[in-house]
Image (cartoon, rainbow, N blue to C red):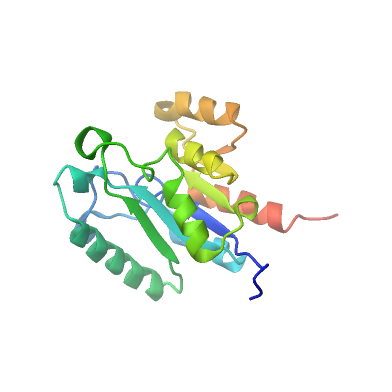
Length: 191
């Protein structure tokens, strides 16, 4: 790769985007992939995207679990994905909570996790996407100059969906529909 060549990436929130959000998920026994997530990850990989997870993990600051617990979970997930012929290229998490550890630059909606990953993996922001189920996810993407997609489209997320749309971010019900949208954007169908 030349120095001028940049990678493209899909930045993914974790809880509520990749897996059921049961609150402070940190054990493999509590981790449940959302439907069609692995298929969506495979679509992204087939399009040449790096897959980067960017996740707020305030359970560490709250002492619900440790960074070691989180790393063990990530290693287990990597093994599961390898069995499915997929992979996550980078795991980035914020272990802070502003009321406990004070302010930081990595907790979404701040863009610190994305900026760190972009620097390490030589990622072009405007060729990449940030996808998450919370408004703070798309706000982090926008702050990092990364086009963003909000997942939700259900009654409990209606206010955040509307706010995302006002930020010119599309809203899709799940990751597989977001993957199909990106696939069509990358490979438009011509008649």
